[in-house]
Image (tube, rainbow, N blue to C red; front, side):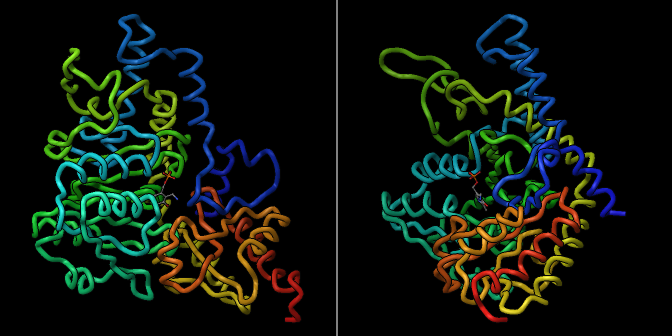
Length: 408
Ligand code: PMP
């Protein structure tokens, strides 16, 4: 029944009518359903104007559409209020915003930051740069063989000098999910703040920022069936209020003189310049699409398909899955190596079989070093993937060593 529903959902995505291919690179970006494309088209056909500035009807409509998107994101993440949602381009910009504003204003020389070595570069380099600039110490947490940061290993480095902990809820390489609620609680016990990278969790599981009690959480719309160029930062209001602005310019000010300026109220303080209303409208439509599909279906479906995928992979000689062998721990993300074959050759062979997968270091070079491999290949599932997609992947997988000239 779930397979039938996935097939039906796939029909909502026009790109799959352009040809026959298995799209298995959903952790990089997802395809967009017609509901999202139509909502954006309607916006540009009937409501486009620069929001916030104009007092005429079109501009008011654009403002309304933008603020509706903020309400939709607040509800989606269960934020207390929409002023806690700041729109940005993507998760990367969101993490930079936090490092630049909170990090620069509130971390001092000698303070410490904790983060897993498995973080995506966008939740790694902003902290590394901040540490260099301010003389901070970084502590790297190491995941176990299951891809998990244990409570024990977290407690082993936690100390009163730590002022910030940054962690992805789901790893874009290992697919493993971390116990964010526990780590946020331990972080708060020493008076530090907890930054959660939700880029890979928000598309796969229900995320409730109040239940997790994180101080900040970021995500990208384009991994959530929404367009590229729109993402969000959730931040607790009391923190956002005391943080300085990120970018300066139009729309983020209250009053400007030759001598200085004061800042607009939240959330506008953090949204300098003309914003991406079309993208926000697409995000609203993507969230309502997800609400209709429901996370209980998404979770069960991805676990089921991931189990089918991993079972198939395990039967192919010389293929090694990185991290846990339990599909429930993968959240639709499976990274692997093949003995004697470079991931770029693997991806090229998949490409010639109309299978889209990712090869490389996955923007996680410190993790690759930790795993002792320069690069891997990753397959990642979305809500529209079917057994047929996985079968196409497995059929191509079986041919790879042969294509590369190995005997068996
Ligand atoms: N964090 C994680 C865990 C990711 O997987 C990604 C995207 N691969 C990002 C952050 C960055 O997302 P974006 O490129 O949309 O800013």
